[in-house]
Structure formats: structure tokens, C-alpha cells
Length: 171
Image (cartoon, rainbow, N blue to C red):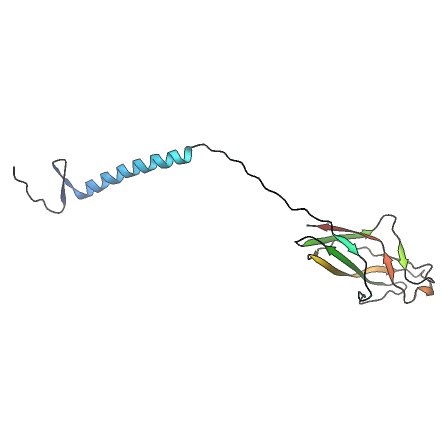
């Protein structure tokens, strides 16, 4: 039997004439069945694994003695308050946050002048803080952080005071 030429809309498949859309639909259905079974096998396969991680060492943040150039912007007078200055060293490679300052248990207030026998100086009530401490040395000014009572003697005029404090720092 001589082979006849079929129009473009027909194809020969297994010796029968088939319309092109039906052929394409059939091939798509076969492809989807093959691909979906592979995807199903991939997503249903069990697995497990392990991992490890390390953390860096957090070094303690410390208070450092002030130097002569660390001066407050305000001075204490009897019955008043003035700036509290802290020098804080953060030896870590990331920022820390100063969140609280409190009097050190058993601490004292030490005046710089010997005639200042009754200073009346204390740490003021300081609320919650959120002061960033960058790596390295930080000078922190707390407005109205120190107070002086009216009981202070005149020998305290011009004195500076060291107040023993404890700081709380968070990472």
C-alpha cells in the first residue's frame, strides 16, 4: 500500500492517524506521571543529619578609674544633684548595653579633700537605663546621678567624690 501524505493536523502513530492535540495531551499526561512519581519519591524519602556550633567567650565589662580630663558638666552643691561620670571598658568585639547602676553593697563615698569629713554625697535614684557601650573605653555621663545633702560640711567645697557602684550590663 502506498504511503499517503496526511495533512498537518494528523500524525502517524503506530499506523493510525491521530490528531496533534490528542497526541500532545497524551505525551503531557505521560510526562506528568513520570515526573510526579519522582517528586513524590524525593519528598517522601527520610533523612537525618548532625551539626555543631560554637560560641565566643564573653569577657566582663569593667569600671575604670577616671582621669583628670573626665570632668562633669555640673557640680554638686548642698541640697542639689550633679552629673555622675563612669568610665566603662567593654573588652568584647560587640556592643553591650548598660542597663542599671546601683550603690555597691558595703561601698563608700570617698572625697578628694581631707577636710570633707561629712560629705552627704550619695548615688541618686537612677531608673532603668539603655546606654550602648561600644567595644573599648566608654565615658558615660548620667545627668543628676549624684546628690549632696544639706548636711555636707564646708570642707567639701571644690572636692570630687568617688562613689562605689555596681553596674549591670547586658549583651
